[in-house]
Length: 510
RNA sequence: CGGGGUGUAGCUCAGCUUGGUAGAGCGCGUGCUUUGGGAGCACGAAGUCGCAGGUUCGAAUCCUGUCACCCCGACCA
Image (cartoon, rainbow, N blue to C red; front, side, top):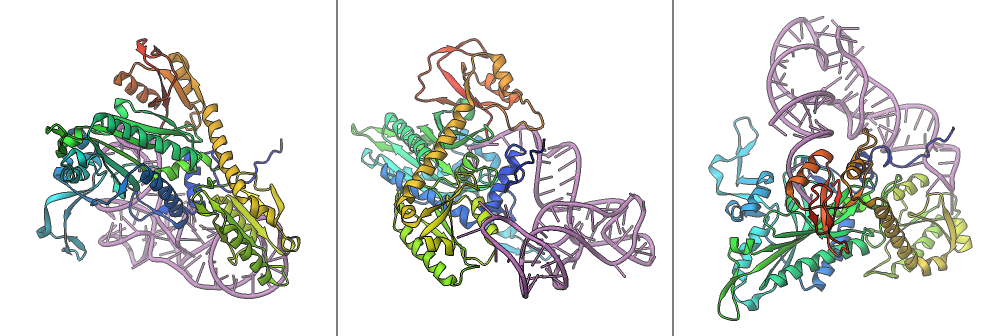
């Protein structure tokens, strides 16, 4: 047996050590790096461009569903947070608090907060903005004619996490939070479900990431919400990633903040509110859904750039003519429309070795690489490599055929990624109807690598919180969602033997 | 907040047990040879050995204190 392991751009590979592979992909793709501040990260241009594409696309979807953007303060008066009991309990443990407004020189020469500049009321750095937005909504909403109020904000939030992972859980992260107020319960529920759908469609269409839509159990619900809905995606280690949440808040926050309005009959009622959000965590989901042992793979619809042109000029008698050929090609590609933007092209003429350069782009996940030298120029062709195929499967194409076909090629790649992810999800999802099989399925075969096993399980569950907690304790497995749109019939809970309305989805989770 | 571990060049780390002029690989710079998939050779720049005390003729190494970070738990979008 002399099957030497093929050289991969990322070490370790996914099979060898998934969490470490994830970190290495982020580094190799130049998406982000750790910061001097514990738990925070610096998002680098390639990673930020990816986030900007996510942002722009979602923003269009929010606007198309009637929402307007606004911006609320980073600081929340401590007393605001105290207004909703469950909400306090949920977030109090992880709040950064601002207590002073001035620094002075300390006894040892350094700077210290000035004891004379202590704030009368401490300010909390927002972990989420329900309370402060609620306070403003209370002023804005007077009459039923002011409703519905449909607001979104793009912002950073801070949650002081103990254990952090780049993009998946950082102390500070970027997100959007939608906040809406409605005159009726039905309207607010409809809004909650609508945004849940918007997230699911975005994930599927733009990220090429299939998701399961459903409602959270009580244990996983947002603090203060009546119902929480989420989209759950399967990562390549078969763990679930909660990729977006939408909450029906009932009248909990409107009562806490006194968002009330005069109805048509002259009565006064509390509004019904919702909130919904996705964060830079989506970038982590994107990485773990598509990337391979050679680095990042980007779905074309969100890729910061679609095509890199690498001029091969070292042997050319006339390097400038190669460059001109490349520039002209880039110009011809850039006018091609691609899902609300145009095909975006980078020309990489840095003075470094060709092989090195090519591998850098593979690791960064750019969909299409073109190497163009005198030979291609002479044949009026391009030499092309695709990130959805093996890195050795390269082909020569006539230039015009490539330019005319580039959009179709990108669409095809987008579809390929979605198909792969769906196959992954299907292959690792199963229905289990007894407790023993459930335990067997989720018990690691290899204790050295407990990450790589299991998957999603659909099983009947009668809904007792203690049962869920017991299973979480024993197996590290939780109910991800009670699926919506399920055609499942009532059955028997595999843990308690009691009646169950439908099967729910169980998995280990990020 | 419990249990374990690590701080030495930009990065990964050796050296420490047994004190004696600061090391390697990668990366970086220059030159030559190479070049259509991660190049080779040569030369070079780069460190207050986390910080503060102590022991000693002499400390990266021994002692005390301190700070920071990492991993495993509890918590989490």
